[in-house]
Length: 64
Image 1 (cartoon, helix red, strand yellow):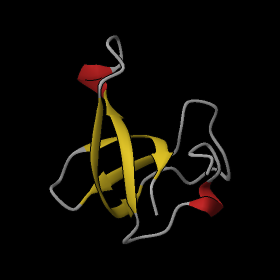
Image 2 (tube, rainbow, N blue to C red; image 1 turned 135 degrees about the vertical axis):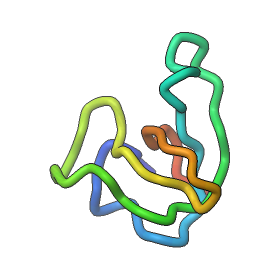
Image 3 (cartoon, rainbow, N blue to C red; image 1 turned 45 degrees about the vertical axis):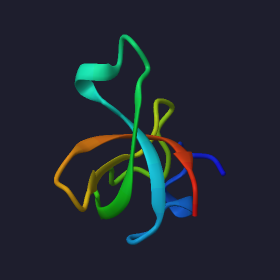
């Protein structure tokens, strides 16, 4: 699924995000969505979320 569309992302789903510090390398971090931080319906670099462990980043991949 596409991580650039807010409607595809729900609290509690498993995703892979890119953290701000990893944007250059593209390293992905896996976790479960706690909060959706982007209010726009879509964002070209990925919807910004907070994971249950507190990390914040943009969704690159939705695992379900």
